[in-house]
Length: 238
Image (cartoon, rainbow, N blue to C red):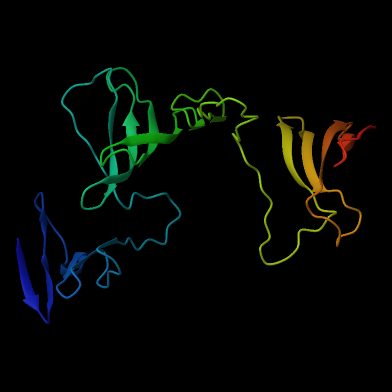
């Protein structure tokens, strides 16, 4: 294989296992030390481009780990983000048992701050499509674990936060944020229940620190408010 220098840019042919490519397949820019694959104008240290007008999914970049024999132990590989003296984060694809199945999961890890190599895995997506936050063994589609240790007199620990936000305007008192619970099968696609929250001050210009909650149920396909708790903790049923 050869690389020639012309006009401050190295262009040439690259031999890959006996296969030869056109010169523009690989581009190395001397000035910026940028590498382009499939592009002659890379905008970062490495840019990979595929020109394809089709509609099939394609692999633009492949990270592959090869082993001689299968094993019951996990084998993971992926991307490492680091600086001069620390592992900052990783995204790993984990083959959970290469000896007997093809199960895999994605592991998202960050540095806990204890040392340059103190990695923790706060999120995982397993082979069943379950997402674990704070756990690497999710039991449901979304499994959130907060392992904060309680201290004496501590009332509660925030495990999940749902927030409506409009920094450029006003969240109107009559609009609600809510959690929907649906059932979908061959016969229907129906919202069965809902939990919502709202500012229950009657006037939009009133106190926006007053909140209320509602619990909704579905009857014959119509969602109705079954219970309402206002900011004075008064409960209305029906």
